Length: 218
Image 1 (tube, rainbow, N blue to C red):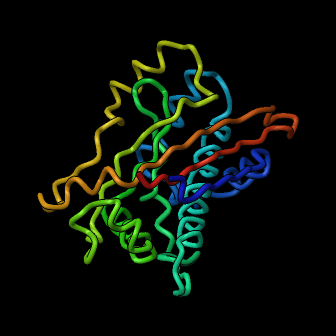
Image 2: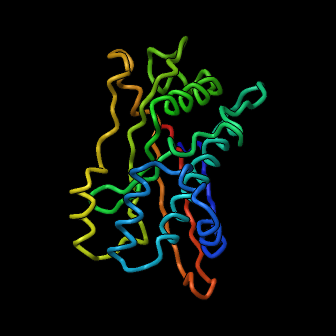
């Protein structure tokens, strides 16, 4: 089922202006994200701000989908979000492209654990039983979700991009070494889908970037 849907739109011109004013925005992105944005900008011969803004929209969309999933869970308990604006681990919520140019959501191990813990605490007994027979009485907070990409509308036809991404080693599979053997099957119960796009021109202030993220519980 679709547990949460998030959407975000970024004014690229305003975002580019903030990028020019200081380098503080870099702390919101991982090294891999910054590297990919630079490579895509060089390959497509466009403004790097387009790709940075699309990643930022993706991060916002992921958080919105996560929050909606918690709100939609059918329980009588109040919704408590795992993070606030003050402690949101933005660089650990990565929006990355694979070697085919498809975007995916990749969460750091601690964020993965937070995701599963927060969602599992809100699940109804019926859904908890459907997720795994072992989990009817106790749900593990540890999860590394399988990342399912959606084809990005902004993907160009350039074959150079695929080669650049492959050689930069930024499409590594998420590490599952911290998961106990008994809980490794849980990673397939939560799946992210994300799509990024941008349109318009930065030069004439018409550019916008947008993202849609879906949190699915299988």
